[in-house]
Length: 361
Length: 252
Image (cartoon, rainbow over all chains, first blue to last red; front, top):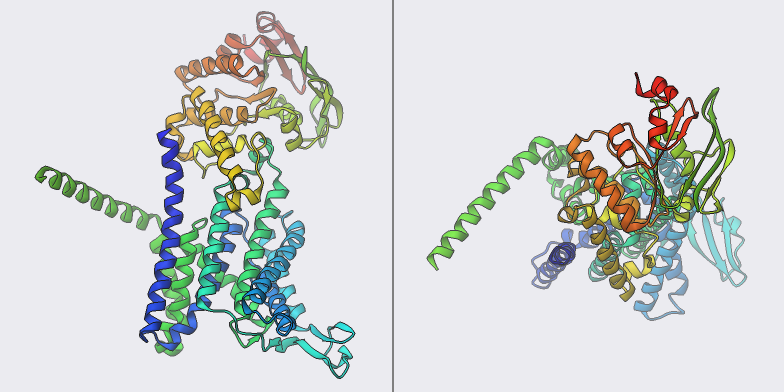
């Protein structure tokens, strides 16, 4: 009975620690802004830290928890960004309340990305390992490139689509072009704030962590560890793979909505292979399956390139070296052994100090 | 009362008749041993029974229900659970979680209830924990509940695999070489555990084993497989003294 209580406490403690960490960071940032101690550069980065963290946590669900390498995660963010932005632009007059409109935009963006996640998941999750990675990469690029040539406009007759140019939309005089191909969407209401970003990050974290510590999460991890054994105990592999993949996609879509409401112009070219890989780097560096690690890695690696700006041409070179060093520190066996030895020493010292103080009392 | 009835089960891989007209009837509550030389097709029989392979011919009935050609998931739901020759645990999960995954289809709540932490989540998780600890106690693994299953010693990993299979509440349990790699003391302990779970969970068992001490000690009937076909079948004393079995498998 005691052991059971301990177990529940252990996972709950980890959740409280992570949420507390986010909240402390939030309060520190807010008070720095209020007292005018935060540079403009850093203030501009706050929201991007939030959506990159959401992306990292959601990708960790696919890569770390489900154990399938996905290289097209930016594609789902792209879908969320565009649907959210289109919705907000269309309803900016009909729904004057910012809170309601933005909440709906977030839900719709997440839903659209989630549906794409299911559709792509059904196709992709039949494959394994490298093949799956390559096909997700392809899907990410397809989404990006289709949106790159897509024109959407609306007038009194309804919504028009074109893959050619804005003129072939054949809009009436009162019509307006929403999506202008490679130029993307401009003039989305900039509703994203740091507070909204933090709330969405905590929400994402709680959704994923609650999923992991539930019956469905165990089924997903069972598939990761040994799918033959998972089948033999009656776990429907396809169902739980698609579940994990689509939740991961929906959360990425949510990050996309946050992105598109933070920036003046949303262009699909921003959601390419590079972004997918960058998010994957956050996940790998933070540790596969380690959600808190993903958040920390995303925040640090969003800050790092900005703080390395003074290095000019050498910036990306140093960034790469720092990445390699961090990776070695985190994951090389020699380093892990050294750290555990060091932390043991600390424990012994702490223990000795405690005993000493007990004696003194 | 027939628990498992297999009629003329056959499968070939290319030109090799891995299992050829395999027929067996296992009565309810029986402990049946399946023995034979390496490559005789014993594990293939298990893979056919659990739906990993689809048979070319033949039929499988579990408790009167035709389960031929069903998927592994459906067959597990119908009531067959198994262990594997090369241990297949969920290595990155705790011992407790391994058993709770076995309880996946016994105690249910929706994904939404899990994410939103609805009351059904707490209620069902508590029931799952209680049931899982009850099973772990039978195998003497309750102290290891929070340890990573990959960190268990070999003998306990084998036991955990049986515990996980039992958690799915099977009518028929298939054990693929449960004593492989165990020392005599561990095998002895395993025999006691198998006897205990038969009593406690009222389960029919079909096991593959090379350890003749275990087979002769606890099996009530023995089936000898050679080149995918039946060589002998019946009570241990008859089968183990059968000259053909001695020639093909046991050695003179």
